Length: 194
Ligand SMILES: C[S@@+](CC[C@H](N)C(=O)[O-])C[C@H]1O[C@@H](n2cnc3c(N)ncnc32)[C@H](O)[C@@H]1O
Image (cartoon, rainbow, N blue to C red):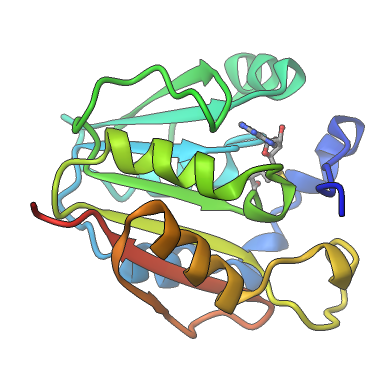
């Protein structure tokens, strides 16, 4: 089945602050378990709603790279995304499958509602693995594979089990679901130490 793509024309929907009632930033940030991260990469950042939230929880010496493949999104972030304290946000035009970062430089990589849009999720996760430092975490948040009041068609969603399989196939260890959100799975893993 072809991946389900978010329509950039619906950008306003992404910016709806009511989303934070379901995608609770504190619960996701705790699940990612990287409280001291200084270099964080969000892949598929959209309008940067979560980049802003998580940057505000980071040390001011840190940087959060908000990556998106869609020029409409990166242009919007560059024009409108205000920083809310904490780490600096850098907007980056790139695809999940070819991230412009050196090997083993990131302390945390995370995605929100991206996994179901990827044509080759294992390839994208392997690219995240490449840029993470040994032992560093990844967090994948995406719609539960069950009916919810909002979200993409259920048949296009991956679900926690599939996301966990993709993470393991890409080379991540300690993969587990953290059941903290109402409508979304949060699946975490770590780059092996050796
Ligand atoms: C549903 S939106 C979610 C945006 C943001 N994470 C949020 O939850 O507010 C998915 C985003 O991923 C981006 N995207 C889709 N495929 C991508 C890829 N292969 N590489 C990088 N970004 C991608 C889209 O352009 C879109 O902005």
